[in-house]
Image (tube, rainbow, N blue to C red; front, side, top):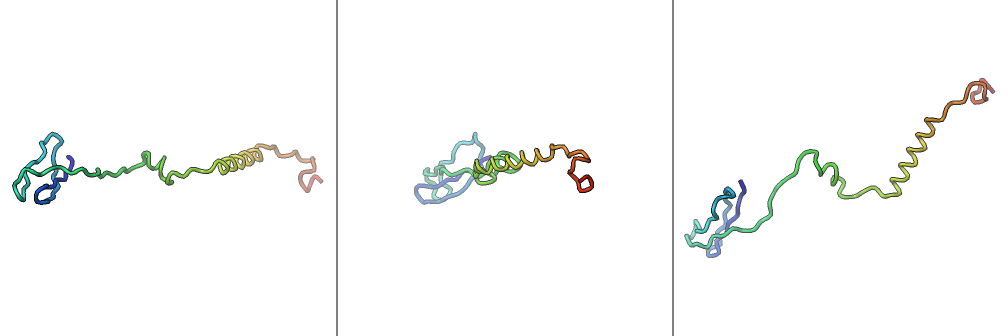
Length: 100
């Protein structure tokens, strides 16, 4: 159930009420009794929790890695992968001190 804020236009009395969406708006001011009690427009208060869109999309304040940094990281990963896949020379090829 939402909380609605009301203010009296005559006496300035303000109060919050917990009401159903289907409830009729209040009209009479509880302080002065005049029918000038009306709803105020206010921002809704809510908080998003959990591992949803915030954690995945907006956690780093909207800053994204620069394209140069991405390219450099990709090149380093490719170089490291290429070094791992190069086969070691066979013994007797002069690659180790005992074969030389």
